[in-house]
Amino acid sequence: MRKILTLTLTVGLLLSPLFAATTGKIAGIITDEQTGEPLSGVNVVIEGTTMGAATDLEGRFVILNIPPGTYTLRISMIGYANYILSGVRVEIDLTTNVDVRLKREVLKGEAVEVVAERKVIRKDVAGSQQSITSDEIAALPVSSVQGALALRAGITSNLGSGGQVPVKHSCWLMGLCSVTSGIMPP
Image (cartoon, rainbow, N blue to C red; front, side, top):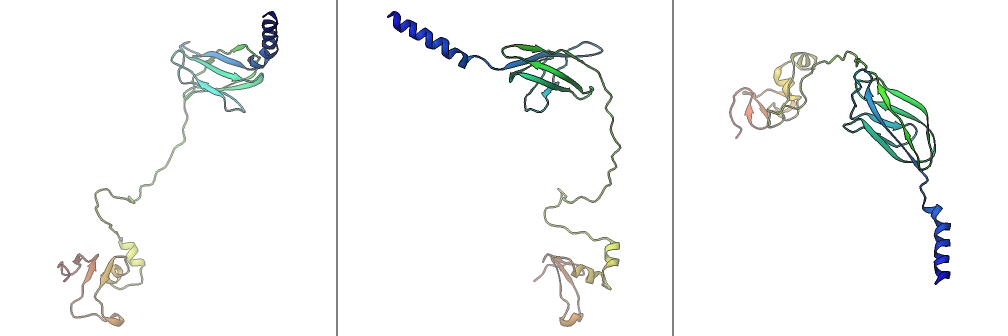
C-alpha cells in the first residue's frame, strides 16, 4: 500500500509542471484624464497579436492567456487620443497591472462634397421606367421624338419597312399605350 502511495505522489510531482500555467495576464482600469471617471468601451489591444479586450462599465479590462514577454498596448476610444504603452512585461502566473488616464481629443473631419444625381431605383414605380432628357435627345442622330423613343428598349414603332411612315404613326410603349393615340393595342 505504501509503495502505491509513494508511486502515485512521485508521478504526480513529476507531471505537475506539465499542468502548471505558462501564461500571464494584463489587467487595469481606464479613466478620463480630466474627470477621473471610468471609461467603458475602450479598446485595449496588444499590438502584433489578435489579443485584446474592451473595458466594462467600471472601466476595467482583463486580457488572459498571454505568453510571457514584453508587449506594446494600444488603447483607443472615439473622442479620446490614442494611447500607446510600450514595455509592458508579462510573466508566468502573474498579473501585470496597467492603469491609464485618457486625454480627450476633438474629432476633426474633412469636408465631404456630395453631388446629387437622379435616383437609380425609385420605390414608387412598380415596373421599369426610363427617362430621357432634352440634352440626351439632342445628342442622338434622330430628327423627331418618335425616332428618339424608337432607340429606347421596350418601345416599338409601326414604321413601315425602310423607315417609311404609314398614314397613322404611333409608338407603343411596352405594349400598353400609344404615344400619339393613347389607345390600347389590338
